[in-house]
Length: 324
Image (tube, rainbow, N blue to C red; front, side, top):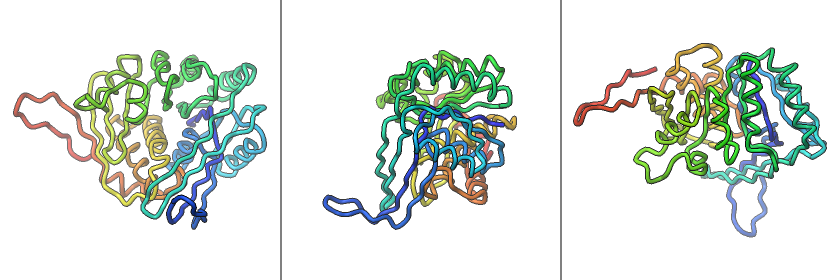
C-alpha cells in the first residue's frame, strides 16, 4: 500500500472555457470537480496504475467533509484529521488554446494539537501498513519549515521509504531529513535557489544540489522538456513524446505517482523514471488532475526514453542505452 499525505488538500474545480478576456462572463463548456492538491492527485493516479492506496492529511469544514467523502467514493481510503478551518478551493480555467489560469487559495492554518494528531495517526495506525509514503503539497499557513521533514522522520522510524514533493521554505528544509526521493519542478527548484537560469543545465544542477543536501534520489521535471534525475552517482535524462495537451495541471503530481508506484514495485530506476514520465504525460491529455485511461499511459510509456548523462571525452558521442 502507498500512503499519500496531503497537508493542504483542496476542492479542485477545473473549467474548460472558450476564452478569458476583460469584461466577459465566463461560462464553462465542461466542469470537473475533484478532491485535489498534489498528494490527492497523485493518489488518484497511483490507484489508476493498479496500486492499493490510502490518503491522509488535514480536512476541515464542509469542504473538508466533501473531500473525505469523495475520496472514499473513489476508493482512496481517506483517514484525515478534522480541523477547525475550512478546507481551501482551487480554480483552474483552460481556454480553447490550451492556456491555463490557476487560482490557488492559501492552505488554512492548523493548530499544534491538530499537527500532533496527524503525527499520532501516522505513527500508530497508517505507517505500519504502508510500503511507501508520498508527502506532497504545500503546508498550511504558519507551519514550521521542518513540517515535511518531521513526517519523513516518522516514516523512517517505521522503516518506510518516502518521496517528497513540496516547495518554498519547506523544500529547503526537507532534504536534511534524507528522504529517499525528492521530486520537484524546475520552477520550484529555481524559486528555492537550488539552481539558476545561468546554469548550463539548471535541472541537472538542481538535482546535484538536492542530493548534496541529503536527498537519496533527486528528480526535477521540466514540462514538455522531460526531466533530469540524479541518485548521487548517475545522472539520467528523461525524454517524453510530444502529445496534444489538454492541460498540464497535475502532471508533476502524476509523475510523482508513477515513480512511487514503480519504486514500490521494485522496478529498476530507469524503468521507474519512465513510469513517472509516462504518467505525467498521460495526465496532460485530459482535464482534472489524475484522470486518464490506462491505454493512454501504456501508449506514452512505449515512447518515453531514459538515457544516462555521461561526461564524455571532448568530441566523443554520448552513449545511450536506448529505449526503456
